[in-house]
Length: 171
Image 1 (spheres, one colour):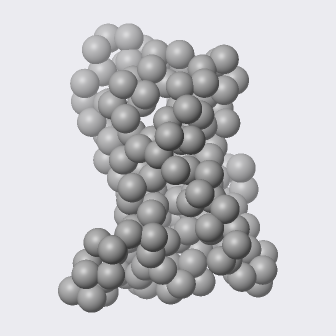
Image 2 (tube, rainbow, N blue to C red):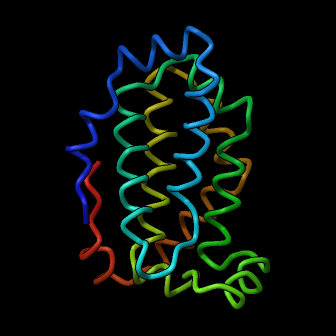
Image 3 (cartoon, helix red, strand yellow):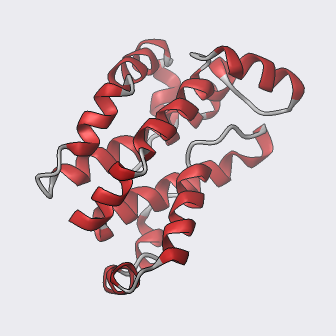
């Protein structure tokens, strides 16, 4: 697994804040894409993309979050959208079975054994945790309202210990 340390250098806090303050519509669109990459379903040969995206989201959350970014995430209901995708990834949604049958993408226990559950949940939990550093509980409330605790408990309860150990994510 790719560790998040190299990605720390790609996410420069000062530049991000300057882009954000100047309107940063392009940056916001890229943020949507990055968040989508961190939680999407992937075929077995593309898991590295999800892991890398998750690591960048973790680094971005740690180094670049601000009150305005957290507010933007809350106003766009991104936590809700992310959790909807994670529910599909975990097999908690009926949509995931029909999608997975028509593609080569992993979901359910196959996604868990490949580390996709852990990767996507690490990204979202990191975002919620870092948002709380700004005394912003909006993302935590969004997480709770969207069933985030249920998804987290499900993932913990249905993950094998060996997969958790072999797919450690640095945060």
